[in-house]
Image (tube, rainbow, N blue to C red; front, side):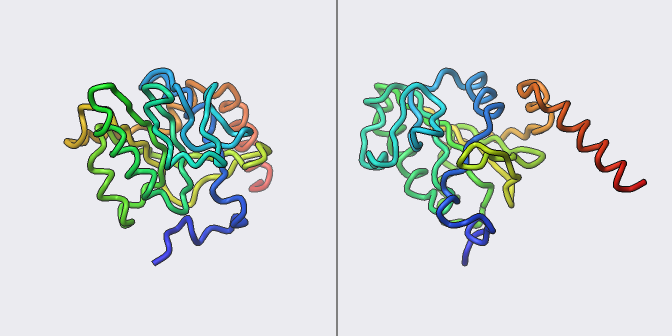
Length: 193
């Protein structure tokens, strides 16, 4: 059964390249620490100083060689191997320490969802996340919810789930948020009056 993401109206060539909004990356850095590596990126959408670009095949790389904490916005069309790699990396490098912070759709009916139970922490959001188009030109809300999974070495399982309000996080970290909201309200008033 196809997921909501697979039913997307986005052209298939772009589906797996949507960017994580900067305010969300900033929030995750504040919460989990400095990211050493972006584990699945292109040169254009990398959120760290270093990244494993798609030509390198991040799933065959040893993530621990890149540092101690990785950021990951995997291809939403097939996140299962990425979630499995995050679990395996946290287990394999437990003594040396490698952790992954992963942005994923909130699809609990997918085969990979059972692996999410290995996470140290799951963040669910009240409100949708607007992802940035692959070319950086604008944003669009995802069809479903978003979750963040944190796989910390030496601390897998017994997942702690936290619910956070997207609006509150964005208000603190996105300077354009208030202006965009006011412009939307003004435009909506003009249309309805």
